Structure formats: structure tokens, C-alpha cells
Length: 336
Image 1 (cartoon, helix red, strand yellow):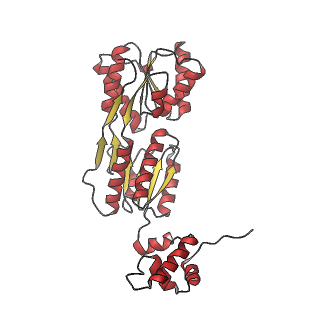
Image 2 (cartoon, rainbow, N blue to C red; image 1 turned 180 degrees about the horizontal axis):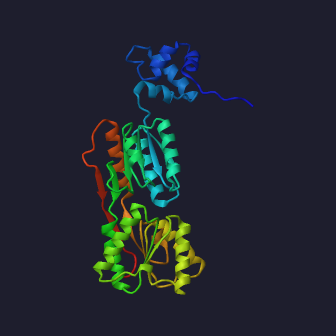
Image 3 (cartoon, rainbow, N blue to C red; image 1 turned 90 degrees about the vertical axis):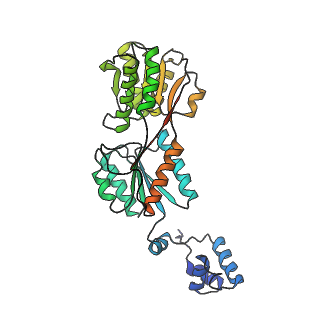
């Protein structure tokens, strides 16, 4: 089997009939400035294109002391919200001439440490992290080496720059509407209770009930994980316990609603009059036969804020605002 080999500056120089130093000047954009003949410059550049020559990123790193690479750490790339965020951030990086490396933790703190170490070993210039950890101590220590920005979730009293969406206010507004229409029964299906998004969305849920004058029952609060299968299992158990679908539910993420909808489809419940709402929006909700009210995050802005903050820190600027909290929008589809 033939072994492949990358084309080097020496190869291009030999093909062009020039010295390696001359080829290097041309390929680094300094040929005209240092009076390399136009014909020679064109010959070197043409050969480089024909042979798909790419400058060594390692040589560039040594020269500039930067890798022009950012690291993104998320719990799960198949999660719709994180997928949309990753896509938006990758576009921003590409437009700025940066490379984005994405790693997933599966909500496992041990695995998170491994993927972060791998990204640091690849000499990323900075990290954007949706962490599964309960303490920021590892990242505070790491921030002495490179900039770190937290997003989507946080540890209590974190000292690190943070960009999140306000979960409490819009959840409270939406749940108040739901509770006034269904005061005797409304269920909360959430992810892990230790995670800040779950805590904040539950706080909004409870505040909405209070504003509607509804006293919550302990059995209305159900926790699982943020995986769709958990939404399916929680909703299946709830229907089995009640002997019917609940009158109203609020899911803490669209992945959980995905599991609920799968159960409803399998058990022919899509025509029920259950009131449904979820944190996070999905474009497919506009095409469903059931009406799902949602809280829509401005994900492109979330990505932009993280990118702007991190690149400024990489450039040596101190954050003017340690915490950025973005608003979210209540999107109503049901009858009100």
C-alpha cells in the first residue's frame, strides 16, 4: 500500500526551480515586498494550488505563539440546542479565520476533564464550556493558562466569565398562563436537579404557579436527564400512574419534549387536549398537529456573545462584564 506524504515548501521550491527561502517568502505573502520577480511568484503560487499545499499549522503556532483554534465543550452534540449553538459558533470562527474543535462530555465530569486536557494539549487559544461539573475550581486554575468562558450553565458564585439565557422570567410568564387555564394539574419534567438550567427553569415554574395562585404538589415535579429517552420514560410512568395523559406539562428542554411526543405518537395521544409547553423552541413545532408553547433562546446571539468575549480575552482584554444574561422569548401556539 502506497504511503501518503504531505507536500512541503521544499517540494514546491524544487518544482518551481527556486530556493526554499524564496518559496517561503512567496507562500507567506512577502514575495512582492522583498522584490521576488512576478513570474517567479506566480509560478510558485500556481504550483502550490495544483499540489494543494498548506502551510504547517505547527510552524505558524511557533511563529505567532497562537494556534488560531478555539475549543468548545458541550455535554451532547446531538442535543438540538447545543447543535444549533455549535453551528453558529463554527460559522463565526470560519469567518474570522479560526478553527473550532468540539468535544462532548456526555454529562460526565471525569470525561470532561479528559476532553479539556486533550484540547489544551492541542494548544487551543481559549475554551467555551457548558460544564457538567459542580465546581469551577478546575477551570479557575486553567484560566491562568488560557481564557475560559462558561455558557448555558454555571456553578454557584463562579468567578469565570459567563454567558447564559434568562430561564426564570420567561418560564414564569409562560407557566402562569398555563396554570390559570389548568390550576388543578400541571407537571414539570426536568433534567438533572444538580444542573443550573434545571434549577433555574424549576424556579421559573414555581414562580409562575405562585403568580397564578396555584399551590404546587410535590408529585408534579419529576426529574430525569436531558436525553429524549428520559422524557419518554418520565412521561410513560406519569401516564401509567394517572391512568391517562396529564392535563398539562412543561418540559425543561426540547429533548425531553421529543421523548414525550414519541410516546404520544406510539400510544395515539396526539389528538388529546393536553396543554403542552417547553423551554427551547424547535422549528418542527410549527408543523405539528399538537400546539406546543415554547421559550425561545436567541442562540445566534448567545454564540456571538461567547465568541466576542473569548476572542477579546485572547487579545489581552479584561472582560468589562463578568456575567451576560440574555433575554428569551415566549412563543405561543396554543389557544389562550
